[in-house]
Image 1 (spheres, rainbow, N blue to C red):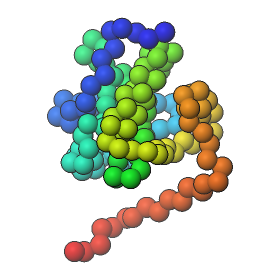
Image 2 (cartoon, rainbow, N blue to C red):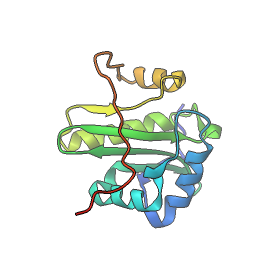
Image 3 (cartoon, one colour):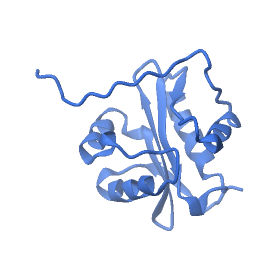
Image 4 (cartoon, rainbow, N blue to C red):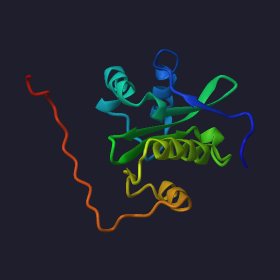
Length: 150
């Protein structure tokens, strides 16, 4: 059941960063706050496609988020989160649908996301919305701990 009092809107760094960070830190499983979530890194993200960072709110309280990214060829979705008190109301689906529509409007033909393999509830949520597990893909990760000069 979708809650009609939910508003989906663009993220505002000045007004929303502290609330978003608190939301992310309160997510029980499937979302890890890391180096990419610092104020400086979020500001960098907003320089590229600020219209793909969305929040859900009710009564001026942020209760959900999703971040999309588009490099001109592929899309990426991450940090889809809904506060546990508000789950089961269609808020995650609203956020996902909105960011997918915005990605498609930019010309995105294929979108990827990473979900931790033990987050079975989220995997089922995405599969129910047309996402599939790409068994042919292997996700590799490399973290950079210093920025090269130049």
